[in-house]
Amino acid sequence: MALFGDQFASVVEWKEFRDDVIFWRWGGSELKKSSRLIVRPGQDAIFLYNGQIEGIFKEEGNYEIESQIIPFLSSLKGFKFGFNSGLRAEVLFVNTKEFTVPWGTPNAVNIPAPGLPGGLPVRAFGTFVMKVGDYVALMDKIAGTRQTFAVEDVKQRVTAVIDQYLMKWIAKEGKDVFHLQINAAEIGKGICTDLDMAMNSFGLSILDFVIANVNYPPEVQAKIDKAASYSMVGDVDKYREIGMIDAMAQGGSAGAAMGSMAGLAAGMKMAEQLTGAPSSPAPSPAPVPAAAAVACAACRAPVAAGAKFCPSCGVKMEAPAAKFCANCGKELGSGEKFCPECGTKQA
Image (tube, rainbow, N blue to C red; front, side, top):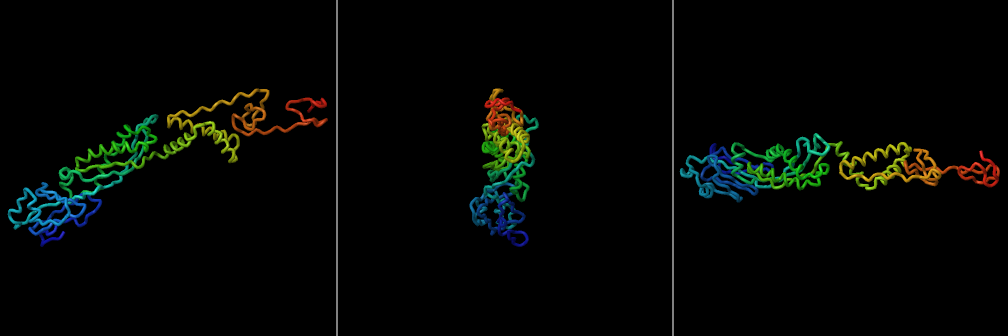
């Protein structure tokens, strides 16, 4: 802005145009008849006199105050005096671009969730798109006493109300509070509608609202991850066998493997609670005839003769050592007290 002497301005323009500023007010100097108004791309100029909007210039260009501006304005009185005493007016330059603004919940929002009396604390992050929509409302509610108004000012207003909108629309559209990202688009549309209505009173329009990410507390997220991994295996028995084999392959004892299986069972129970889908019950091992059974060395459960693994705990069965008659060398069957070949009593 160049000054003509100490009082008159010859050029009215927004030289230091910034992408993060929504409007900037020019004022403080009187206009002379040869003054010019410069409107650059991405700007609108609102001509003000005595605090009232006299005209809005949306086309970029270089306007002469006396020949192009004054004839356009309806109620200015200064031009009657030929600018001999100067015309004190103001120009509000408005940034016409669409702003993409990041947002985030300042604190965790407690979302109602089944089984959690205090609610499930979540934090959310994303972006919203806004622009100036109503110049009159902007003047009445914001621009009246401000020199500038920046994107950060809008962000603070959105942050002040975002918690209540999240709770409202998650309750409506968040069909599964443990998987809110699935319904993020529907939740975002609802918030966009409410937020646009709230910001319209300030002359601002909210064009889009995106929920990019929903974060749970670390301990809750860890349980969700585990539940998801358990639910990926539909056959609980198969999962149990895999866990037993993995535990023993890593050098664990039968007792350690059993402990591992207890953890797997607890995980499957948690998966059932989180997803609501009942896990398949583990079938009971088929009864083994007592005459044909041997006792498992780990859990003492009956095991069919010739079985390689115990059906109760999964421990590998060791083959019994063969016995031979001390007299004739005939191989003896299990439980035989006399040699079937020579009749010698066995020790």
